[in-house]
Length: 326
Ligand SMILES: [Zn+2]
Image (cartoon, rainbow, N blue to C red; front, top):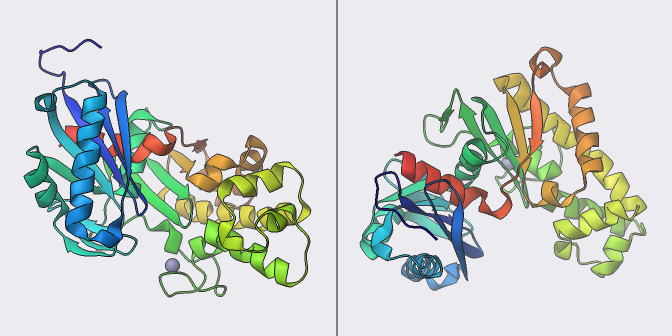
């Protein structure tokens, strides 16, 4: 490891704060990840405990990079929920059980370096834009399919947050007028129809009707245990029920993507998240085909749809880039 003292040789910390784990990385001046550290979030222990765990994860990552903490200039953190990027206050994060937490202020006090706070999905989208699948484009929509479905917008080269910082909530765009109730309280939301919880629900309903499936057998009927890997396994091995469910999910995904395409005419859609990452290229190709058939045709011209490439590093890399560019 060569460490220079010239200007522009800035080391930045990126942090991905999730409901279950904290991931921190030391990012070198070229955007490479020098080291990573991970801890469980343990949000049930309260805000101060989580802040302390973030600080410890960060210090561990710096240690692993064999870097003096003095060499670290700043920190960017991607956090879940509704937050104000300007003040760094997390207004509401249900999966941390947080309300009005001054994350920026608390972390700056603990670590003594400037901290930038961004919504995690925005950070992941920015990471893909700066260092991943979206390098070179100016208009990009990030869509991440995991437990739910999150979205981020880069419009004309800038992260678009909306009037209240809540833009990009593609998971709550309606793609049906009825259906299962979403976590937000509404029905017909994209994520309630095509996210992993939705897929689990579809398995559950099929199971109740006595449908056979290797995926259902493997979890002994407890569909909450069906992870993205198991869905992909069922798909690849030709499990009939999985194929049928994913045929339906593909149409729903295509419709959600088509909404973003019609509204924003992006240059690129980047698709990531556990479900998309786990599924093979055959699924992805089928999805592209369905988008091509179902989206507003004039907006499809020149559109690229790519897989996200940064995986678990997307949020921490994006948060670090945002911190560096501040
Ligand atoms: Zn919703």
